[in-house]
Length: 374
Image 1: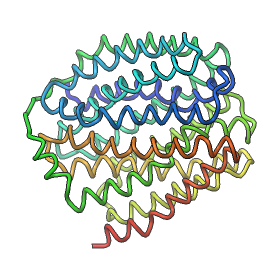
Image 2 (image 1 turned 45 degrees about the vertical axis):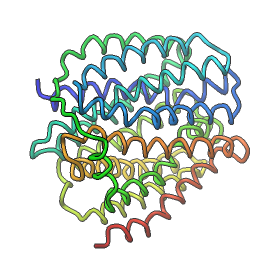
Image 3 (image 1 turned 90 degrees about the vertical axis):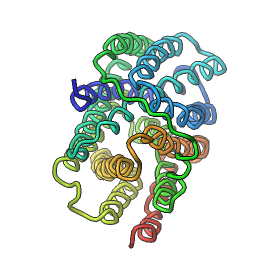
Image 4 (image 1 turned 30 degrees about the vertical axis):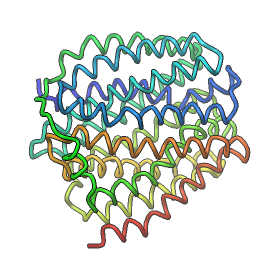
């Protein structure tokens, strides 16, 4: 079976779990375990630090060995970690298991990215659009299911259900294609990476992803405390945004790729993402959601620009290591954003991290012009 046929299924299933954990977990941490804003920020920062430490080694392994083996190990560890998170209540124990969970999601997600980039036919933008549309569709389903499960059951039962789902998914990894391994020296990776286009790319991407740290630590709490939504309402709100991102990714891959210059795409994306993040904080639900949808459109364009840029900049034999370095960049942005915005949200209001990080996205417009004007 071709990677283009089975990969969207796996990324969709994985994303359903991640969206529930990533966005709804703070409600459980604050409401049930009574963790502070600083502790919540530290948890998400550690999740990002984990990714920073393991991303490049995992990427190099994916270039040298079959990536589906990494995916199988990642799913098995993910299942154990989710079950463990459902059992513990102390911060220290939760932090330790959360570290293992972070390792598992890096193993699995990076292996899927490597499989996607290794298959490189002429219709790459369309395949990437399908892949990312299913990724966001999975996040939409996960947000809806997670919100409903949190409402009707409790979050520990939801974690156990997802743990069992990951075991089932691990059993299906035999469907993934086997990639050809190529040994590449670290010098070749550094030679490719330390060029002006790549350094520009990772700089603006790091600054842009600071807002993901703000979302991780503050968005669900803003929706609950500022907009007054129930956990089911939080899940529905987020699912709507994910639907917009999924549609944007699909349309990009199907119709938009190559139609506009990179600077135009990037400028539109930053404008939509930044303005949407700021304006969604006005505490009226229809207004907030409308601007959240605008933000999602911007993030969808950035998502596709990131994937197509990686496939354009790097040789296929080394794309695993290089795509992992790009992933390291984004997780470094989430790490920094989580450390900063977790305490800020708890101290000054959950709308403040969203406003500040949105302003940073808008401030990247001159940087985009400087880097791509030629």
